[in-house]
Amino acid sequence: MKSTGIVRHVDNLDRIVIPKELCRTLGIEPKSPLEIFIEDSRIVLKKHDANGLVGKKRGNLGIIRHVDSLDRIVIPKEICKILTIEPKDALEIFVEDTKLILGKYEPACIFCGEAHDVYAYKRKLVCSKCIEEIKKLLK
Ligand SMILES: [Zn+2]
Image (cartoon, rainbow, N blue to C red; front, side, top):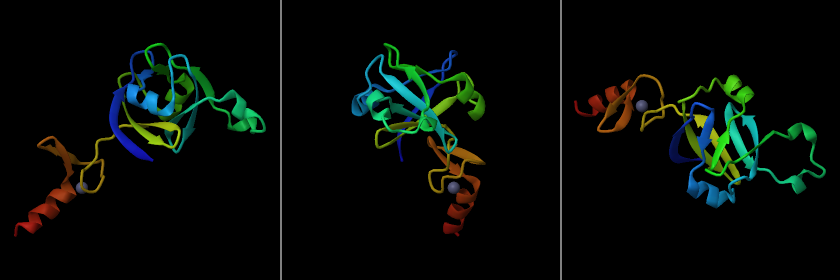
């Protein structure tokens, strides 16, 4: 799974805009049906292929929602509730094969990935532990 580096905000109606370039890469067009499910506390969006369902266990089926004409998709209320996503929350967008993955955006240290106790320096985030380690280099 790799981050696209794109962070988008959920709007007041729990919608999120899927970036144009990702729609193109994944073959998502306006009005396309997407299957939505939760995996490892992230939201997974996958182009829904009705033909692909033959022989597939129904239990695997996610919630199906259509992309609107502006490439937006409504995140189902029940998923927002489970993952505690609220309007205006920022979601980071990842891709894996044909899946689009949305995770809560937690700014993290550029060196170690720690999300707690981080400071911004020249528009980069560094955690206090790494700051201490850098200080030691100067001694
Ligand atoms: Zn760090």
